[in-house]
Length: 150
Figure 1 (cartoon, rainbow, N blue to C red):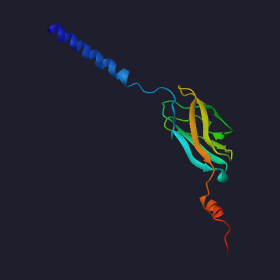
Figure 2 (cartoon, rainbow, N blue to C red):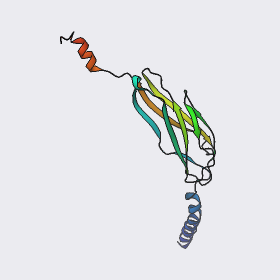
Figure 3 (cartoon, rainbow, N blue to C red):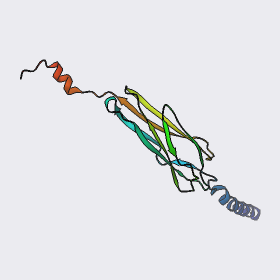
Figure 4 (cartoon, rainbow, N blue to C red):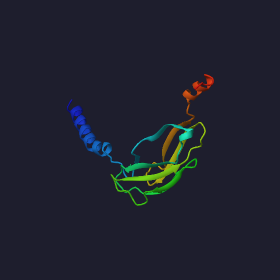
């Protein structure tokens, strides 16, 4: 019985020594986390399309400076500017982008890819939405009612 208690105590002490170092490991290095998961533009109408300008914001959630080495946009997304200086832990950076959408009905799916010293590699930010034609029910009703006499 005494041997069992001693084994239990040794095991307990060993577990207490190992556990803090195993379970409380901080994230090492820079960690890029987007302020928002993604952007949904909602429904945009073909007759109201303009140049879309927006900023994609992110924060360094790690414990070392975050360095953005390059940024790419797909499908005609223009990278206007991005934070080029190292971003200290807890600080924010941004990527400024702009793009035009084709004036025809379609689903929007744009991706901004940020390459940095985050150990996870390239981080992608998604922009979604839909371009649709506006249905003008009022003018259809007038046209089907026949000519109006004034």
